[in-house]
Length: 316
Image 1 (cartoon, rainbow, N blue to C red):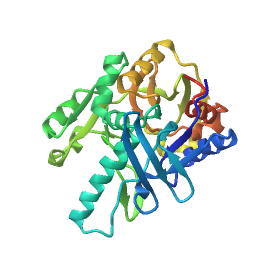
Image 2 (image 1 turned 120 degrees about the vertical axis):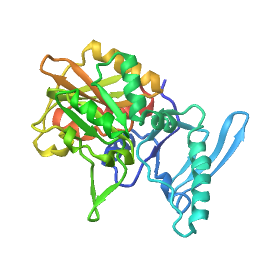
Image 3 (image 1 turned 180 degrees about the vertical axis):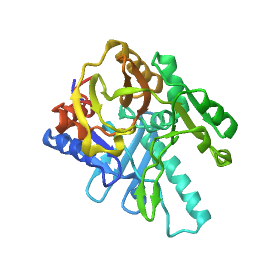
Image 4 (image 1 turned 90 degrees about the vertical axis):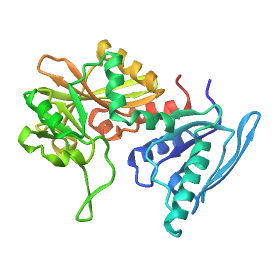
């Protein structure tokens, strides 16, 4: 059965991946209301009534109105944060908290809505320690990992493995000379670790001697596996020189992939694996809001169509 109702798309203005999905849904005559929750309250308003049937009311953008009781699905990607620059610091903090629990809470409580993914589940799955622990329980191979603020523990861990890499635990906005930058995954040696490690939490992981990376993208029942060959440690730093090939997803990997999604209550996930010289797949991470559209023209995989099918609820 095809469910009626609108599709909500919640993301920031600059999101080319979402642009493709919205275009596909428009071509199918599926009604879409796209907005950035960070636009509240300047250009976004809502009124939600809690009734015996659930949540009823409306959400209004400058060009669209959504019926909160008739939402078939929500594509929750990467909205910006709430901001109240016209208020003093204390009032802005209060207003942002009310917005998070008011608008955010309403969007998380829509009856009959398929969430891709539910914002609360996204929040749970974005914690790397939780993701790595779940990966072990689901049956993945996971490289030995240390999360610490203790320089001594870090040195001992680095000394116990032939090669160790440092990873950021999260990727907030980071600027160098006013330009957006990323904290890269990098190899680290024991002599590079000093007392500054005690200033916050760090993630160290044994480096897998890999022959390639694989990005596995799950969209409901559909699974897409793409091998990524490169000459660098972190392929995300050198998109121009990547080589792509579609590969089958081994059953030994698909089972824990789906178990992982069930564990966190997700219907979408972008999984990264390192494949070693023996052909073994090692779990690195799963991004519940990950990118995928750049691989479609490189591989011919029908990923935009699959995401639109999921949001249209043409597939289970």
